[in-house]
Amino acid sequence: MASLPTLSTNELEEKIHNSDGPVLVEFGAPWCGPCKQIDPILLNLASVYAGKIEIFTIDVDQAPELAMKFGVMGVPTLILFQGGEASKRLIGFRPQKVIEKEFFGNL
Image 1 (spheres, rainbow, N blue to C red):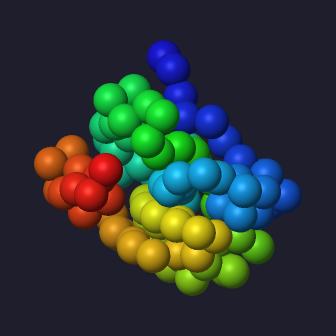
Image 2 (cartoon, rainbow, N blue to C red):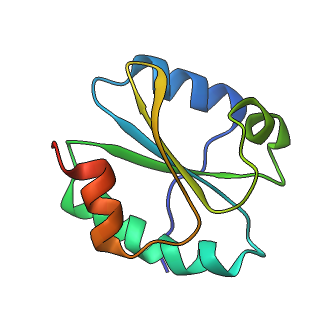
């Protein structure tokens, strides 16, 4: 099964500061059931909105410093970065329609 590209600490900083468009990051973990449920939704959205938004994942167990930096208290947490800054956030599993409305409504 395909998966979202995973970012390291340095890669995240580069992506959010150098991207021409918005970047959506899922903070999750392999052991997280809701993360496993949301991943296929995000993969589909990455395909549908290719060229308009980049979507990545961060494993909070591998990068706890990023979870702390961005105030991630539960997984999955979705954060939209625009112009290098976190602009929107959703915590927990959400259906595709909710994610699209929240993050993709203006694309």
